[in-house]
Amino acid sequence: MCLYPNKDSNVIEGDFRELPTNSSFECDIIETECNREGYNETEHYLHMQIYENETSESQTSSLPNVHMIMIDSTSTFMVKRSLPRTLRFLKNSLGAVQMDFLNKVGDNSRPNGFPLLFGKSVEK
Image (cartoon, rainbow, N blue to C red; front, side, top):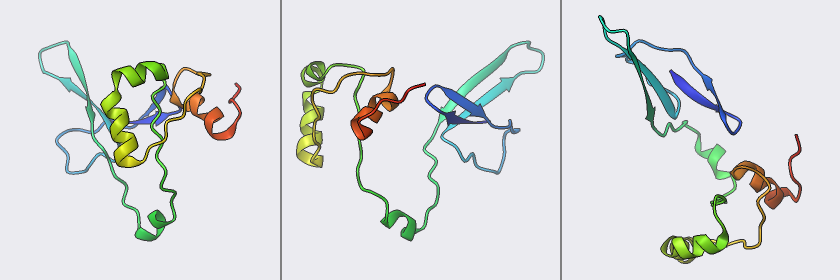
């Protein structure tokens, strides 16, 4: 079955399919369930892939060409100490800009990104 992201910490489950199958899984996360006859145990596995939707050239040519990499689980000082080669590569090879002095306002990247992009926090 496919697992589709739903907000930050939930998933929506698709329908289970019998394997092997000739159809492809059109999702990034696939859960499989394995049962053996004569055994009472069921094993579950998660498989990861990158599923690429086919888009026409006209759709992609008008999209913005900006990528944001947020490392918000640690301080700026610790990133500079722990990942100096990564920062150097991002800045020198990709033209990245480091934004210092941003404060944590949420538990993960999405709520921390809203104040950066919009100047306001999302309230529940």
